[in-house]
Structure formats: C-alpha cells, structure tokens
Image (cartoon, rainbow, N blue to C red; front, side, top):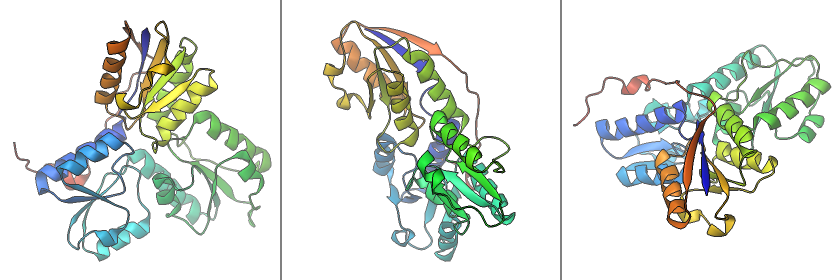
Length: 312
C-alpha cells in the first residue's frame, strides 16, 4: 500500500489560535472556562478540553454570572455578546480573523442598504453568527435553486458573502447563478472562503487522480472536512471521513491501493499519525508526503490573553 499524505492538511491558523486560546485560558484562570459552542468542530479536541475543565454550552443561561467565557473560532452574533455583557461574563474572543472579516463585510453592506445573500449551510455555527450581524437584510442560500427563489431587492442593491469553509466549486456555481440573475450584484473585495480551506481542497483535487481511495481525518460536523470527502468522491474515488483509526474499515482497502490521506482544518495531526499506524499494522506500507502549498499564516492570541503569567 502507498499512502499519499497531502500537505497542507490539518490545523489552520484560525484553529491553532482558538485551541491555544482555550489552553492559555485554562492554565491562566483555572477550570471551569466556558466555551460558547464547540471550540472547533472536532470530537477529539472537544473531549480533550472537556477532561481539562472546559464546559461547552449552547445557551449563555448555562454560564454562571461572572465566569470566563470563550467565543469559539466560528464567531458569534452581536446578541450573544450583549447577553455576555449583561451576565457580567469575562469574554475572550477566539473568532477566526477570516470569519471576523465576513462579519465586517455584512455590517458594511447592511449599512449601505444592500440585500445580502449569504452562501452557506443552514444551522452551521459560522452562518448563525454571520446572519446575526444583519438579520433584517440577509438571506441564506445553499443551492442554485435557492438563488432562483430569491426576491428582487426593491432598490436593486444586492451583495453576496460566503461561509469560509465551503467547497470552492460549489460556491462558484452559486455565485455564477447569482450573477446571471442579478448582473448588478457585488461581492467582497477579497473572496471569503479561507486560504486553508482552498489549499486543502486543491491538494485533494490534484492528488485524487493518483489514488484508489481517499481517507479524510475529521469529524462529521466539520464542514471543511465534509467538503474534502465530497471533492474526492467527485474525482471518482471512494472517500471516507473518520474521526480516527477506530472508524476505519479494512474492507475499504486492497493491499496494493494508493491511499490519499488528508485532514480537515480542525483535525489534529496526532489522529493522522494514528490512522497511518493502523494501516501499517495491516498492510505493507510506504508513505509519500506531497506538498501542494506551503502555509505560513499565524494569528495572534486574543488581546485578553496576551502576556498573562502562566504556571510552568
């Protein structure tokens, strides 16, 4: 068996920053530290932090007044921030800066009187937070058919934004349909789908042609991991999304297969290594790392955490 190990894979800068933020908060303040929604969409990461005293909540009523509260990488709506202030919570904002960029674009378009079309997945934490910035003038679309059902804005002003973790191909199809129906539509100055999402998708597209099967390490509720699995499938090979080696079915593979392995932006490299070790236990294996793009992006910690004294 040959394993084609895609690079880049796994943690992006936003996930690294969010995970480091929760780690520093737990060390500096001690447990419990409350987190609004999962810090990132990965079961292993969430369970590891839960064991250390992080408490993940979906309702701020569950957070005792005066507690430490961390906003996850996916961002939150203004109403959540208002409730946090009302409950005298010490809020630490670990929102990915690329998600914050989309929020700021939504605020700007709303102030300028646009109907805003958000391309994304209903119910995703990032989408909920973004729509909360301008709920009175924002509509969600998930497909080209949704575009056909959109109302015509009374003043003709219409703009689009996208969730940062979408399939680039899917988003482009919807954007093309929007431009066909609304030639006057405007978009963000720089596209919203994040660099890491694009790079991981590009690696899968390029390497799938050399592979017999794809293995994506990531959780089922991870949007960007699901997109990697879908893209590999669209390239014509079987693709499987696993949290770790416990989810792997040996029946997916033959001994002489070339296996494309990658990981979603919220999946730790530790889980990739465990999946490789599992395959090595059952097949004679060679590993070839294929670098498609290099990434050197780094986001600083939230200002609330910078320079805090930490126990050794």
